[in-house]
Image (cartoon, rainbow, N blue to C red; front, side, top):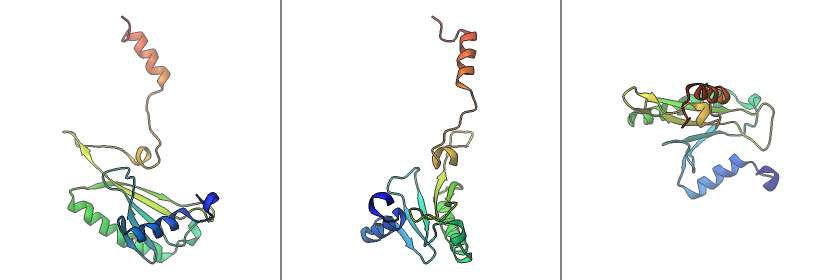
Length: 150
């Protein structure tokens, strides 16, 4: 986005969402919030830290605003019967005009009698699937057991 438009994606997103008035939850001094256009879960809150394209630019005001806003979001989640969440905090290592410090917060839902959570943050927010089995070992085990033999 930056290479094509010479604009920061997140700043542009917040400006456009403010114009549309549909998904912008809050435009704050230190952090602004919106609901994602293409949610990764049943709810998907995106927080964008104002004027912060690196870790060094975060100050006490940013952290205080985040803490206060998270309490409000947690109250909302609680009102919907949601008790847990996944959160991703993206902080560029070096100052980068194409990026801003931002976060995503999605609720975790429970499924079935075991009340097992539906998904973890690596799978959902990083899009990094996890597997505790080596595929080749699974195939070898199935072959040893004759699972797929006719």
